[in-house]
Image 1: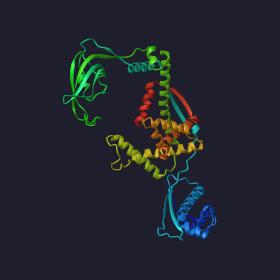
Image 2: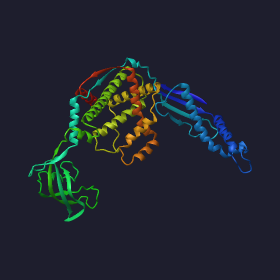
Image 3: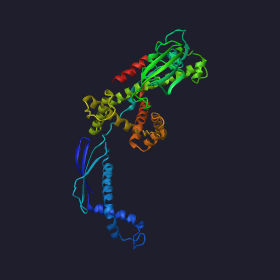
Image 4: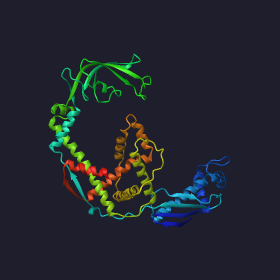
Amino acid sequence: MQVTETLNEGLKRGYNIVVTAAELDEKVNEKLIEAQPEIEMKGFRKGKVPMALLKKQFGQRLLGEAMQETIDGAMNKHFEDSGDRPALQPQVKMTNEDWKEGDDVHVEMSYEALPEIPEVDLKSVELEKLVVKADDAAVEEALQNLAETAQDFKARRKGSKAKEGDQVVIDFVGKVDGEAFEGGSAEDYPLVLGSNSFIPGFEDQLVGVKAEEVKDVTVTFPEEYGAEHLAGKEAVFTCTIKEVKEPVAAEINDELAQKFGAEDLAALKAQIAERLEAEYAGASRAVMKRALLDALDEKVSFDLPPTLVEAEAKQIAHQLWHEENPEVTDHNHDEIEPTEEHNKLAERRVRLGLLLAELGQKAEVEVTDAEMTQAIMNQARQYPGQERQFFEFVQQNAQMQQQLRAPIFEDKVVDYVVELAKVTEKEVSKEELQKAIEALEEE
């Protein structure tokens, strides 16, 4: 076998590989010798069929396998000898298209090699960790929000008009073309005005009603309404208003705490403080992670595989275009050309991605089966009722598995680097942390 270098420019590599006819023939013979003991043929005992006959019978079929295995072997040996790691799957093309049995095989192989990643002194990285304590004011604010979510309703003074946010208790009967329809009536129904739980326009017409009033509400069912016999039809609902109630926040006491699973108010406050500090810690980590990536980006410089950068830039441009055009839900649009800004961002992402991958490999960072299972379960919750199908889909889809594994791996490498870096804690207010998060989102 002959391997000749044809291109060595930056990270681009090209080689001509020649697999001789003799090598192919030898490979076919190896396969036949391996299979011979198990082959039976009329007129011969098992394992006693002559090689010449086997070759005539099976040689042509095995030739393709031998060719592929020999080329794969040549590629693997090249990567072992050279130490190169291809950035993407190498491009392999047979150049003598008029090949016939007995000829040598000529193959062109080209790829972009992954660059050598320079060593980084991680102990020289300096980071600031923002620390926010859950003070009494924050806990009280969270308690008030909980009380509002646990709100109740109390009757307004007699004769009061219903406002948006109020609850009206109604009996109603709906009719289409003067005929009542199934599912169109109810008694003592508590409807919160502004909740948008009824057909569009229904709740708006009840704003201003009083208890003991009877009001006809006229609405049109949406064209895409679930019940086909009602879709697009105009309906009149005769509503009898029984009560008009105003919202009142629940009292902040032990009873409220027990509604949220705490033993008493003190225990609920402790839980809220713990949850708030966990939220602050998550936000603080996001800020520190960005600072870490910025620091690493400044410390390293190396050649980047052009195809990786180009693919990343196209993906960034495509994603941002869809964010700016949310009404387009498919991909039936013109190709989005990356801008210089997209290319710079792509270079940063590829550079940091290669660096983190190298750091993780050297530190033997691994994503465990338990971590992957948890990630799949978290994702599956977005598909209620189809969790099992999603789980099976991921198990059979290597690309999806990699999409779920990549962020877990990155976070574990970040944790590893942070452990080695010089981290200084700085206590800040909730507002200062919020500003730091907003600054990230604006970049």
